[in-house]
Image (cartoon, rainbow, N blue to C red; front, side, top):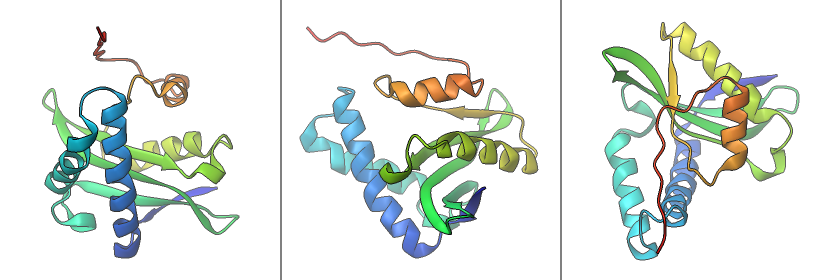
Length: 156
């Protein structure tokens, strides 16, 4: 069974370094940022969203731990936001570590997230997924997520 365990400061530091680098590269791949500007822009966005790290109000950062294995298999970050006059959970990041992918942990993590969101009294979860991340998009659709916005781009 997968558990959502609040991140420690040490885990947060590792998460921040990895997530900033990954987020920067996703924006480069999507054509939104140049390679040169990507890391400073990603760091800026991350620091604005989590100025107090794990203690930032309304932000929830978890290590995903497989109870049977006793090991961390990934990480999850969401926050509570207002959308359309209603409080909703917004998933900033979910990552399953490479060695644990394609084993059902992503689905388990999203189901554990649903339980946590219900505990907080919320009735909606929103997220962003880059268009080139076909595996994640397929998983979210399988879980019942509906597309609410599509941005498109054509390189000339």
